[in-house]
Length: 350
Image (cartoon, rainbow, N blue to C red; front, side, top):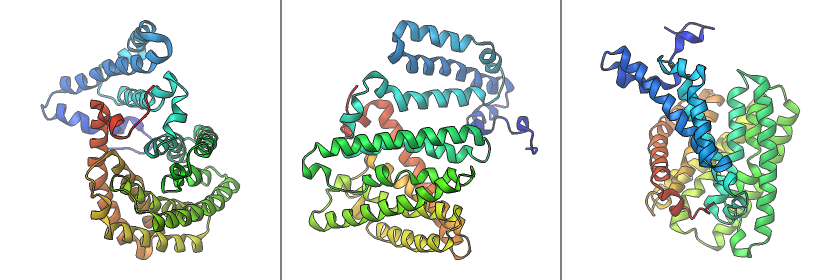
C-alpha cells in the first residue's frame, strides 16, 4: 500500500507492469531477474550512447564500467525501478542525440523537410515538457531544464528561419509545423507559473498567442490556394495544440477569460478535425499520425482544468486519447526499431 512521503512503498512504481509477467509465475526470483536484465540493457544503452562519441572500443569500456558500478550491481538483484529508469533515460538520450552527435550538420538537412522540422523542434519542446513535469517536485532542476529548453528552442527556431530563407518559396509555405517552431515556446509557460516565474509566463503566453494567430491565418490562406496532399494531412491536427496549450497557460496565469475563449476555439478546431477524420487519414497509417497524439492529450488536460461544463467533454477526449495514442506510439517505435521510420519520413542520414 502506498504510504505518503515513503518512496519505498511505491516500488517498482513506473515499471510495475513489466513485473506483472514475473509475478504471474508466483516467483520472487523471476521478479528479481527482470531487474537484473535491465542491468544488461543499461550496458547496451551506454554502449550505444558512447559509440558515436568515443568509438566502439571505448564505448565497450564505458558499458563495462556502467554495469560493474557497485550501485548498479547491487540494484540488479532486487525488484526495484532504478535500473529501468536509467535504461529508459539512456535510450531516450540515444534516440534524442545520436544523429547530431555523429554529424551536427544533419540538423540543417532535417529542417528542409516537414517531418524533419517537426522532429527537430520536438527535441527542445520535450525539455520544456520535462520541466513542467518536474516543477512541482524538483523546482531547482526544473528551472535549469526550462532555461535550457527555451534557449535550445530559440536557437533551433532561428536555424529553421535561416534554412527556410534559403529554400524556394514553395518549400517554405506556412503550415501547421510552424506552430512547433514559432508557437512552441508556450510549452515553457506550463512550467513558468509553477516555478514562480509569472513574468516569463506572461511573456510566453502573449507572444505565443500572437504567433499562433499568424500561423493559423497564413495556414488558412495556404489551404485556400492549394489542397494538402493526403500523406501530409495528419499534420493538420497540430493546429489544435496551440489553442489547448495557450488555454492551459492562460489558466495558470489567471487569465480565465482568455482561457474560456481558447476553450471554445479548441472545441471548434477539434470538431472540424473529427468531422474530417476520414479525409485526414485517407493515405493510411504513417509516422505523421504522431501529430494526433500531443494535441489530443493537451486538449483533454486543458478541458479538465477548465472544469465545470468542460469536465465531461474533457473526460471523453481523455478516453479517446488513451485509446488512440498507445497504438500510434507503438507503431512508430516499431518503425524506428526495424529501420523503416527514417525511410518513410525522408529523414537525413548521419
